[in-house]
Length: 443
Image (cartoon, rainbow, N blue to C red; front, side, top):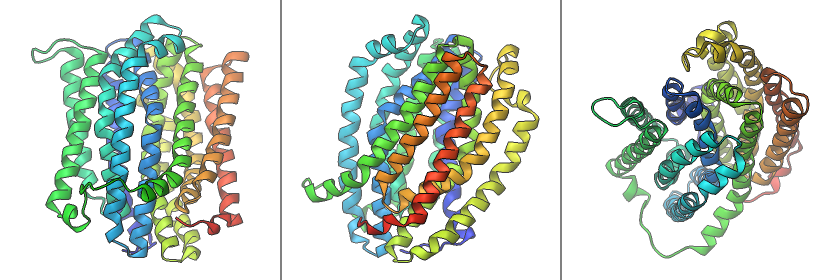
């Protein structure tokens, strides 16, 4: 099952992935849009809650990415019989990881939030959200495993259906449960958590039913759980643990970034959550392309055609700019109107306009940085991606701490950290690919 590194094929595989990424962001952004009209404390809290949840997902994200890399490699090698074995072992590991972290959040969340967050009201709201939403990990891990399978074999259209279901469930239940419509109680941030949990369950149902109806469960022997395969588990861990560390660093970066801003006050944190939501929306197409590039690079290496990687990256960057730049121009020219989608608070809108313009500049640098970084991951050199992520994070948090805490500069100056950090990532990723040291690896 070999990929064609053409612009048309890149787009065909990436488009459903982009929609899937949109669905994940819609869950977070819908919560922010509704809670932004519910209360400032809840708006400030939901961003921190999502950041803490993301940190707890680090091992799950690492295993899912490792799973995708190996499935794509086996597809490129034409070893289709091995794909199901890899998937089943990966699902074993993802399920066990999810159970451990759900229990951990249930027991430790009240103490962690109280220790990390200065505001008692925000800490309590964060804990209320996590106590419910933590159960989503059980389904999120399975969704990531199924998504890794579909992306790895370049059958990504099912992600569109899962996207629609995830988004609709979350939007409808947010509207009903946060504000207490249709006779339901007014639950606030707890209603947002219930809606998000239900959305993950709905998406899992779509992905599972599609695998059954397309007979992938029979063709690849999916969900055929036999004995624990220690050799395959070790191979998954070898590929995945640097990616997991990478995910841990990335998610911790956002958590610490928000905690730094929390020291600037509740209003600053609420404003930062809105700006981050816009930032995340702008990056959705790029994340879809980068995930596709990761799988395609792995596939090309499996075909023993690494010379085609350069052309693949150029086409992916061109497509990314074509899709994203019109939105960047719109946001740069009309930041207040864009922020008004998320909140009706005129002060938050006024304070966030300049920060949003800085974010537009950052995205223009993130595009090539993310494409080259994903190519490094696709080669299987996941330790290199971890080191690059570590350098990126160190740069961003050091700058944010100095500007926000030491110098007390405005929020838009703090957001310049993203520009500097991604310049570092772009430079290191380009240099690593050019050096060609990844050729020594066997996945």
